[in-house]
Length: 323
Ligand code: NAP
Picture 1 (cartoon, rainbow, N blue to C red):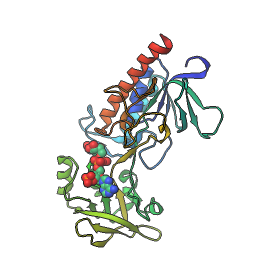
Picture 2 (cartoon, helix red, strand yellow):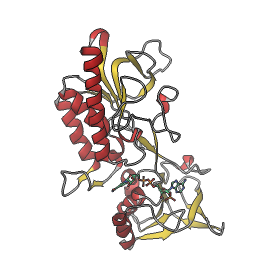
Picture 3 (spheres, rainbow, N blue to C red):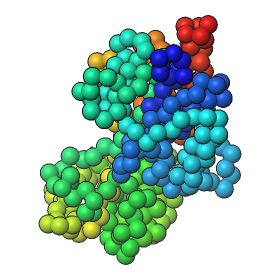
Picture 4 (spheres, rainbow, N blue to C red):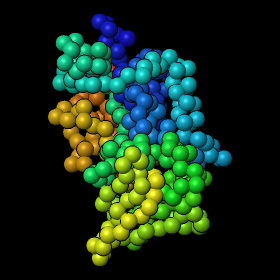
């Protein structure tokens, strides 16, 4: 840490991007502080979205695959080994208008910030989108879920549905067949967005059925989910589907609310970085991983961008603070 309790590097987020940035800056003796986030049932939690994933088969170096949480524990152990200070805390406010940058944890109205830092690396990731159905929020945790890994176990021998046509929906549908009697994929078009290999696996699974050109208009149940109302997107006709679990896998939104009005963002809310670098429009503030990537969104690309942001931060500190 530099003078007056100012950290050299403060990293927000502890998914593959944040922890890779931590490994690199820790090995550069910059003693990074990582605010890991707090436990939640969506992607914005310590360890990020891989904590609510099952098998990761495409992370290089693991020919047999590895479980998401296990991979993240390995990232974390590696960051700790080089002296990273990891804290299960979540920023409630940031002030990036002048240096040192200020970060609050807890009461955002507190006069004094919790932390000050010469550089901030933002790796706050993205969070699962919901359908905004009239009864959806009320039934979250009572049959409505965005996390198959967390909740699949509760649906042994049940009929359930999953919404979405991407890789996440296929992966989760396949995973859910370990428990459920049937899994109906409800997709708004008549073709999937998922990669060929995932499509083939889902279609070959006898427990998975597809409801094409269909959107869920509401989820019904007093205490727990009893059925969904599905509308045919071509004819407009509505029908009931009796299920006890509704899993939602329709993509994510970036966790950038804290930075509104302070950092440049795309129209869809993703942070803008300069070319291949992690530089944002504020000097000394860097971003990496899903919070700035609406194209690739892979664990390996997030880790790569975490490395880039760390090297950018290191060079910036050398030129502007320690040089
Ligand atoms: P995605 O690729 O953006 O797919 C989202 C799906 O949800 C699309 O099929 C979309 O329909 C549908 N959708 C979006 N909004 C909807 C709404 N309001 N109502 C109904 N349906 C809606 O998201 P993802 O599946 O989460 O994947 C994100 C990225 O992670 C992708 O790059 C993916 O390849 C990657 N990923 C990879 C793996 C793997 O390799 N094992 C696993 C998971 C994710 P349309 O198709 O009509 O747009």
